[in-house]
View 1 (spheres, rainbow, N blue to C red):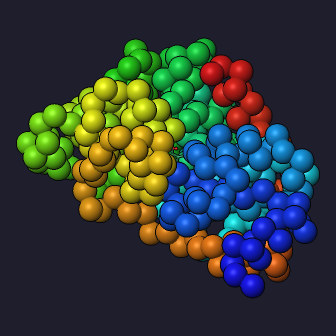
View 2 (view 1 turned 120 degrees about the vertical axis):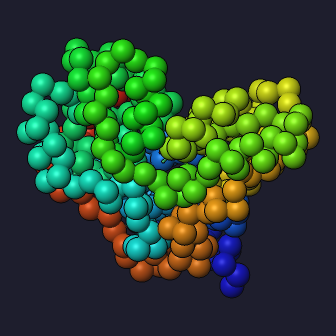
Length: 299
Ligand code: CIZ
């Protein structure tokens, strides 16, 4: 039996839904029920009556699905798929930082572990980070774990932002020189980048957005050539949703090794064996859920 037929059979058998992040390989995105950013996917899965959620992404994303769907079994096809940015902070190191800034509120980017979310006052995505910070009744904000997103927010608020020194190693590879070269090569093109890019890259872009925001922007702009500063897996959706436009990437380094670990074979295997179950302890889950719920109240 071929892989896709077996996948369909297992989906029925297990009552499973397949989620694929925008950075996954084409084949995985092609066979997912939903493709999107991590929080959007977790919400979509929670709204289904599926009993099993297969999250094709990295550990923190599968944890977000488990936080929002405590009654469902969440599987991560590749257990080693982690996130170097999320790994820059632990609940212990965050507690130490909080002790140094007792008056600050903690805003935590969704790109973080469940335990770090649980230790935060409120979560944010890259599209609502400014709004979340502005809504808090505190003048000092401890913003974790992405320093570049913290800088993006700091430039758009009067509040004092205390950043955590974490970076996404994939977005960090893009330099201002890459933007200048790409613009010189395609003067008609517009440049759209993710706010996880370095501040000097963000400053040179025409538009800054999350992965879902980049896809929306590509559909709305009148430009026919778009230079993109985020992980290359996004090309699959960009080309499908905007077939009349041409896409170029700022750097060949925009490939996340962790995101590329998931294959269709691994999706089939976890559904067959019901292995790699992602578990979030109930007290952590409830606290992390509260941080996500506060974000939803604001944004
Ligand atoms: O939450 C996500 O999916 C991430 C990490 C990025 C984005 O902009 O979609």
